[in-house]
Length: 155
Image (cartoon, rainbow, N blue to C red; front, side, top):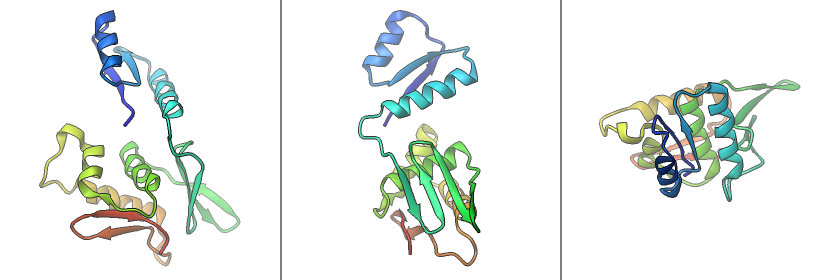
């Protein structure tokens, strides 16, 4: 997974160690939020084998390269407003569209070191995504494989 190191350690040896340990980029605090966003976009563009293109599922378009999702409504489409963690979950599911993504992989992605086995945070994000992406009468896009994980696909 791509990683950008965000740290107060500003010595050359620290930057070299961070990059040599696998970081795609290294940003020293304090930083400008616009620079952080630009660097994150650059990391995404540099990813070798990163999924690109638009995934069409039902009335939803997911553009992995642009980090955006849209819902078709009538003759137009409307961008779906997602939080960073909601997007991370959707991106992980979309990158493996049609295939099972384990609950533990998704929890590690959104919770990292904060991971608590008893937490229902992932289920909350899945519920939010379902509300934002799936209309009441529309077919479900995010399917639960009970006790294992989730699959993103058309019904």
